Length: 249
Length: 267
Image (cartoon, rainbow over all chains, first blue to last red):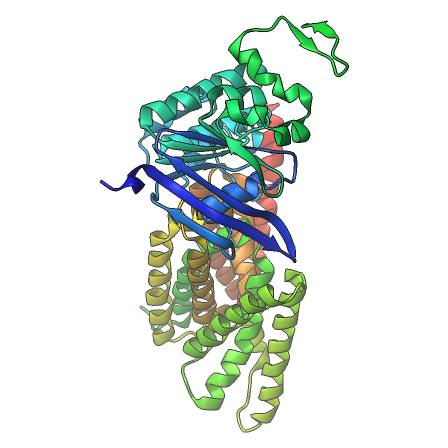
């Protein structure tokens, strides 16, 4: 067996230039089976662009992308459904895959939106829509899941449950996950590999090594580097910018 | 049975309605109504070429419409002009070139009105064959590409990411549109084919709550429009093509009343 066997997608020094402006440049990464790779970075730092490079949505790119699977589940950052198109949740579930009624029900149940099966897709709230998007992506039992801010607009309790679910899916299906998230807590606690982007790769590695990187601190501020400690031992206080101790609300 | 001109017109119209039903839904979903109009305008050029070189009208219209669609794709990539401007440019310049060429073909007596509005009552048996066999092929291909076409209609990037090859599918869809216009142009004319595509589909949107239902209602709406339109043209001695479109409009207006009532009942 070759070493490549576990790699699902591999980016080598990739970049995209549109209208003479680099959206992102020099990104290398690989997603392996059963691993979660996370992209973090400020707005406009090229996270979604990097995900789209990995998915093959951009055609004219610098560098090289190799995909070793066709079974891909994608949760895009934004999707809008035009009024002219009447479409129910159950129609949307079948968008790129043939599924039985049971499979649809099970996937919707996992993300807690089974009761919305016959609703019009446009009448869902933001959080409900995200749950449907996640259900659709996992119902195909993909080898590779690409999740672009999958829990945006989901309530706090649901957010944690959905991250648990995503982690559970990756363990159960053994699929690789490329995740984009703003929630540094989740990123740092559930991820195998972190890439910190700001138009290029600032730093990358395990969550433990990334939080200690000075470039990470520069990008996210000092507060962000305390995040890992929250998970390592539960703090009952935080530090304000001038160093004084504030008790947690 | 096909010896009666009215029966032939009816059979031709019904055949076209079955194809415009589903294609019209995609035209509305993908916001292509102006694109359909552009293809139809360019068919005048196709018709004049058919007369100039003595080739089959449907074939030359298909050729010109497909070429036009390709030119549009090229223009979209190479200029920054918005889509509607490009479509207007192509629609009217191809129409103008067609009219200029007609002027040179003075030895042929052209029925311009017939080209613009069609002459469904002049359909012969061979036209019927072209409509029904051509229509069946278009529907068959549409059924084969249904899943990727629908996926890329809902979201292009999602379809691309999950291996639905939207670029290729869009090209196939464009050719299907050109083929429909090629087989229908003689019957309903350049100006009215877009109406046949859009009005029954728009009516169906008012009544449907899922995509397949919308397609079925759109087909039924088209069939009703053709039947009502043709019979009333017989009754009132009105022009047949415009009567069909008027009937479609009446159905559309009725469907608007329906949703208002339906909403009131829900409250």
